[in-house]
Amino acid sequence: MRLRTVELAVAVIAAGNREKPVDQVLRERLRAERELSREEGAEVSKAVFAYYRWHGWLDDREPVRDRISQALELAARFAREPGRFSDEELVSRAAPAWVREELEVNADWARSLQAEPTLWLRARRGQGGELARRLGDCRVFGTGVLGDILEYEGWVDLFRTKDFHAGDFELQDISSQAVGFICGPKSGETWWDACAGEGGKTMHFSDLMENKGLIWASDRAAWRLEKLKRRAARARVFNYRLALWDGGAKLPTKTKFDGVLMDAPCSGIGTWQRNPHARWTTTAADVGELAQLQSELLARAALAVKPGGRLIYAVCTLARSETVGVTATFEKTCADFERLPVANPLDPGGSPQPELFLHSGRWRGNGMFVTAWKRK
Image (tube, rainbow, N blue to C red):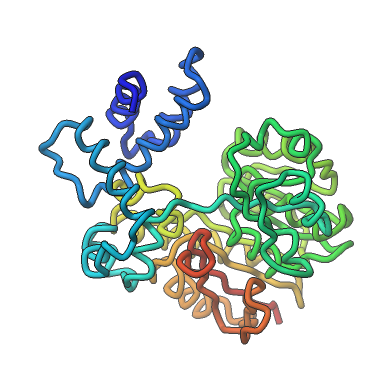
């Protein structure tokens, strides 16, 4: 690495902490370094993420520069010869020890954490093949509706492409897209994306609904909803309304919905491949606190489901407390809901299950948990 990029990577790592995640620090520093070339920026990003991805192999007593160099060497070796890393080594070092209390840390999951993340795109409905041809360096995931899921393997800055500015695709993880297909909102229905964030699933809902019907999108942060509004304008999405909701007992609307998606705030364990810094800042206490919050949010959102309507709970974590623990609590207190079996849309030949765990090792996306109910 060049001295300039090494020094910048060291500065980013020094500034990142639990309150200010390193990916946020990285974005801000790269934006501030106006004379930095795109190649140098990519070099800094690669160094920072390798440092945290291979953190379990590094000696904290060594200088950060040396640890960065060692992490990059480990990443290159793993890419060339993954078999040189034993299952036992990966299981013991890839994630903090407390995680074993919440999920099975097996070799497949540990190996997936150490691999470089896949970049997934979602094309407009029915346009996947044509978009892949225009962009190049794309692999179409499947057939039918799955033909709009694309794996991008190129090096072009997609945010600068004509197709992106025309709203022809979104960058959206494959597991997140699977949640949209599981919800299956139909043209003319009314849905609530209760924790919409910046609107990835709201955009997908609108595409599946052919921009007809109505989607309420809420979040506790106004800045996220502003970003959603900008994304919607670019994608020419019009069938939505925005509302602030802090998760409290007062819901943002009295509307009763055909479907409600509770994509709740979570520990993000399922994103640890893409966000390795979070592996070493998330704690077991966080998981317990979030599980309590998730149960409260799910119970409140359920009040907005009309009779015969559906409630979907999705979280990008695999922790038992936040997945089966939350669903068990909900079913003890909300007897007017019955479980709906969930089929994995990424595996058309699979059988529906009471709950679905999407594992990053198989699908090369975020780890995700999804379950669904119907109001009696």
